[in-house]
Length: 213
Image (cartoon, rainbow, N blue to C red):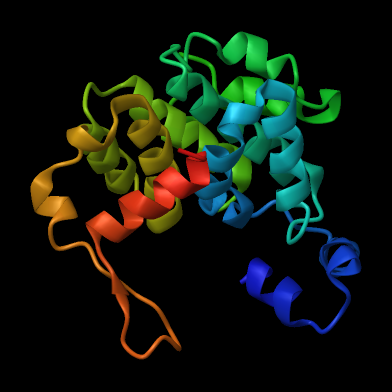
């Protein structure tokens, strides 16, 4: 809802998110995180500083609260590390050191190994418990499918938490780890494109283009 409001309020793009935040005093929804998998793939090859900076700038297009920027930046960096065959969870202390000081403690809490989504103090529609829940799902399971199922079973803002978990688990486990019974029926209708539908091969092609392969 926040993303829709910012994109349709008729204001210039560089003012819309800021104005929304000033008016509503709440703009730390998880929408910027939900859409971040594609940009994380695209900027991963550019390195840590570039991918985290890009995440913040892209999040700021619709979310005026810096908490959303920082969560998206952490997600970008975790995806980049997974692409380098590093353990993104083991690297969390180093990644947290790059989070803006005003938001570092908040993210350190939800990304800690001992944290559980039941301990969240906000609804997982907010960016930090959403990311924390996704990391928890990845940390406490051993497969792509189990990570997604764990995220869904948490309830709440299920589609977003599962989407973020899918981005992290996909980067960590790879395409072959996704069950074929999930990928074979996959289809994405494109509005305004005369019935064109993207299927698995099309999406893989787009992913390679995003990654610059």
